[in-house]
Amino acid sequence: MEIRGRIKPKRKVRKKRVAKKKGLTHKDLVVKGIKWLRSQNGKPWNTPVVFGEMVAMGIEIPDVIGFSSGGNSTLIECKTSKSDFKRDKKKMFRSVPQMGMGKYRFYMCPTGLIEKEDLPDSWGLIYVNERGTVKLIIKPKAQYCNLKAEHSYMYSIMRRTYKKKNNEIQTFFRRYT
Image (cartoon, rainbow, N blue to C red):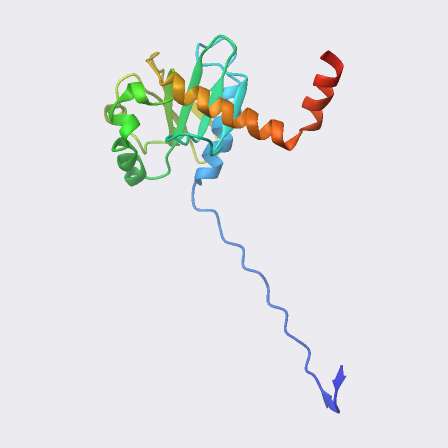
C-alpha cells in the first residue's frame, strides 16, 4: 500500500497466545454448582429454580442459590483457594448462621481444598475433581435461615424480570389474566 509516495510495510500478525487452564476457576465451580443443584431430584436440598452469582438487594451475594415451592432454599458457596475459604468464615452471616441464606448450605471446591474438619456445623461439602466430576462428600443438615434476606433476594430478581418485560412472562400474563 502506498501512502504519499512511500511504501508502507505489511503489518506483522502476531499469533494469539492461548493460556493453558490451571485448575478449576470460580466460574467453573459456579456452573457446576448450578447444574448439580438442578439434578438433585428427591433430595431435601433439591431446588428447581436456581440462580448463579446474581447480585441482588441485601448483604449476602451467594455464588449459587436455589428455591423450591416447598419453602426450601439451598446455598452453594464456591471456593478456589484456602485463603478465600478462611476469609468467608469471617463474614457476619457465617459467624451468626441464622443471618445467612439457605436452609441447606454447601461449600463446593476442588477436591481436597477444604477438609471435613474445617467445615462449619451443619454445612455440606462438594468436591469437583480436575475432570469436572462432582461428588457429594458431606450432606448438610437443615438450619435456620434469614427468610427476610431470601425474600429480598427473590423480590429483587422478580423486580428486574418485570422491568425487563421478559417476553415469556408477558405472554403468560396475557394468556392468564
